[in-house]
Amino acid sequence: MQQLPLLLQPKESSTFSSFFSGSNQMAVDILSDIFSGGGEQQVFLWSSSGLGKSHLLLAACEMASRHGLTASYLPLNEMQDVTTEILQGVENLDLVAIDGLDAVLGDVEWELALFSLINQARESAVSLVFAAEKSPAELEMILPDLRSRFTWGPVFQLKALSDDEKRSALQTRAAARGLELPENVANYLLENYPRDLFNLFDSMDKLDQASLVQQRRLTIPFVREVLNSDASSNK
Image 1: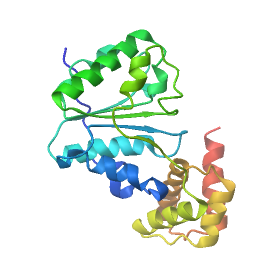
Image 2: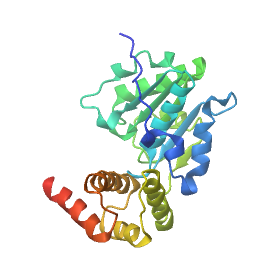
Image 3: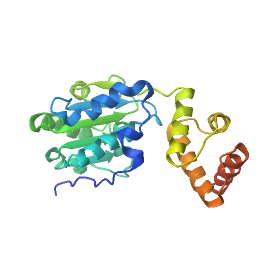
Image 4: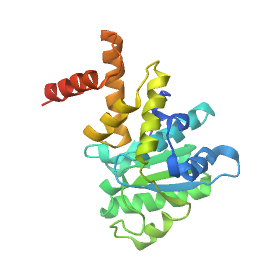
């Protein structure tokens, strides 16, 4: 059975415009240019978790959708008991974004399937975007030729935002929701809660909802009350 593309609903959290690039702007530019006619056909992103790999892969799929193209986002590290059958037919799409490569490498069946996909994509002009937590040179795999295939396009290591960039990102996200995030409150969030942008934005979404319900401003006592209460309820 041909693998159907994952249907994606455009969301604020999965677009290039909502990604705070910092020193990662070149990677964003390359991905944004994939469908320009002269863009790269294959891109490989790597970094530790929480730095935006999944966001950028989803953004690429969202952009494809807006161009009337077909795209599939495959988060292999989130799919329980995933097999290579999921790749059947994806070479007929315009874009395939494969996240969490680390979860399947070291399995010869998967490596052969990925090797075949890259070769087929090259012949049929399918765009590929890969993401992993290590660079192609550092990933543990069985097939040496697959390692070289992953470098057929640009390879980018995503860098963490500085504290100033994270603070600016939080204040921008708050402003988009009609909230004012004072600098001292932003600093409190950075100093007392998980510092990766995914968790910081998750905290901001919870604060936005609580602020709307309770009609309260973002202050340190309010932030502590909302986020500590949420942490306690999830234990």
